[in-house]
Image (tube, rainbow over all chains, first blue to last red; front, side, top):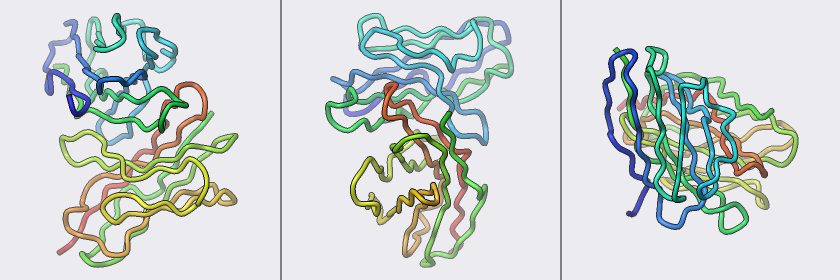
Amino acid sequence: GAGVSQSPRYKVAKRGQDVALRCDPISGHVSLFWYQQALGQGPEFLTYFQNEAQLDKSGLPSDRFFAERPEGSVSTLKIQRTQQEDSAVYLCASSLLQGRGTPEAFFGQGTRLTVV
Amino acid sequence: AQSVTQPDIHITVSEGASLELRCNYSYGATPYLFWYVQSPGQGLQLLLKYFSGDTLVQGIKGFEAEFKRSQSSFNLRKPSVHWSDAAEYFCAVGASGGGNKLTFGTGTQLKVEL
């Protein structure tokens, strides 16, 4: 597609429920990032993939958060046993591999997760 | 660790007036610097970026920003604001290594009065 696509756009989950958020990056983009944006805040880094390899997961807030990109394209962010503090917009971004073209990240529209 | 400070949480300007949004960063080496804009319910759109070279960079929608190493600043400017510029603006710094993950400021909400 022309841009980064995320689904669903909105998700309401009951506390304790597991959720899965999907990201389709721009075709050919090797790097993929997940960010969490709480209300009124800037996005905060969660994790980074280069192809299928998860090179940095230092921003994942707990072991309830898990991300994968098994074939180096589509990525899924999974949150287990959701808590109210997980309510946020989850943004996915993709970019060309650094050193090949500009390391400019293109963002999807995000998934707004509300935990009730 | 890298960090970004946007000291102004809210700014209100009249349409047609000039605009400057402040951004200060902390990073040990030469940073990659970005300004993004976010409209309600939308993702982030890149306005402009600085990697190296000319310290005054031009972006889309008539925006520009100036990198000042001595002040650790990367302020965003626009000579004449349009009502459609009302949005939230984020400054971000990227590391030259580590896959270029971005560290964002907390954002500045811009309101434009007609």
